[in-house]
Length: 264
Length: 328
Image (tube, rainbow over all chains, first blue to last red; front, side):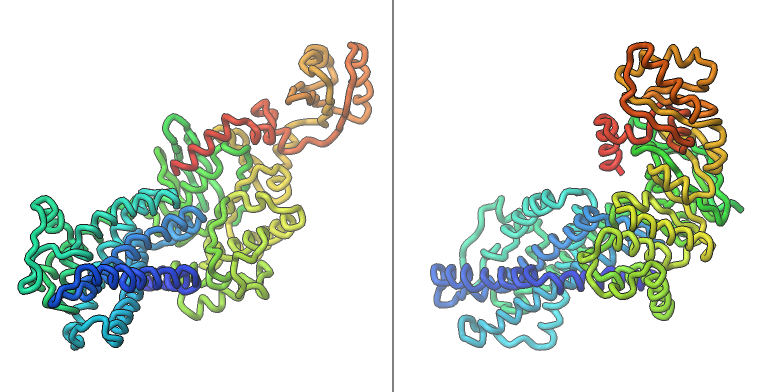
């Protein structure tokens, strides 16, 4: 019975996503613009013989897409409260934890779908010769998938934690932006957080370096980068995996705790 | 076993006591109405019984289950149609029902069968696959009612089921409610601030004001307790005439509500011209007059000195209601 409740909450999120055409298009186009315009533009400015900025940035934009899409998915809870549908959900004989899990899986699936579309765009860049990355094998694909799942679960839970406390659909994106911008900027998505042996010898100032080290998304993106273009990765895959795994479990617990007290 | 038995059920929002130590028993199979002005505590009461809102004090048994100790058992046993819309407009009618069926753990076969049955019952079968966005408000209300019935609840709560609907739709909803109650044997508890709704539909009515039940009986009995007819006279400064009518031996009771003078008399047809004459002698002019059998509104006026309708326009009350809503 509870499995069915989780499933139907997930199913509803899927229907919503697929029926909102304008939103689907904007969600696909926005990250693609990041890659095609910011990526190619900055590459023109910063490329060195041995450092293709577009290659470096591509996994970061995948991470960015997951971060934004996951955290923002919490808005569906706000709209449900606004339109009264949350009452229908909360009065059903289904525990709050299962409701939260259904929402987490729905939001994460949508975020991962967007991540996959972006990976295809990266593949297209490879085909037309803008970047030169190695063709990923099964292990790499699996690794990409695992990191995408963990990043999505983490930030969907964060979004739901915020959503359980916020009533106003206008306030939600404002608050969320305030949260995700610093996470994005210090995650190593758009600039390297440390030296890249053989390519970059720059170092960040101490305070900024510390911020990047305590940012869990840094490890998530580094994990993606190790699977996509390992020569730009900073940390061992096990550190990346451990950090984002612990963070995702902590956020699911936090989200579940806050969601328990949600009211319509 | 009663369908509902509350025991000192209380809910406070800050200093506002929305529901004040209500003890109420509702029997199985009853069509029970909770009548009162907006802000009287009807919705809060229903929300506590349906486990949407925890009580501040006291408790209740719904279908034999304690709302505090076993909320999930209560939720399985009840259906509820909320006062405010609670449909997903971006799903079709059928999808809304399917969602509900799955949330209540119905199998595929049960869902298919019952979805068709409840759609039939509320007359929405041919619109089932349209998006709810395209429904009229009456259709939405009927869909919500159908949804409330899908999991075969023993008890159905209807919070202001006909609020804002046109008279024709209201009639048809009344019919659905009666059919449900009589043929499906569902205990129905509805709230309303339309006295004619409570009067027409309900086996028993509880009149609620400021969180307390102030009168509780069958509608006919409640009205019979007000012996006689009600003569209402519209005059300027009605307070001036309270004294002379109170002294008059034919007049049972005098109440002033806004510019209306309500007089309870035993033989209205004969007495009305004499009552008007009395006002004219005092230099007053009767602008309008009505004579009628007492309604539940008069029962409310008798107990509170206020009309149900005048409550709606008081700004202070509106503010309280909004505060109660945001805190919910």
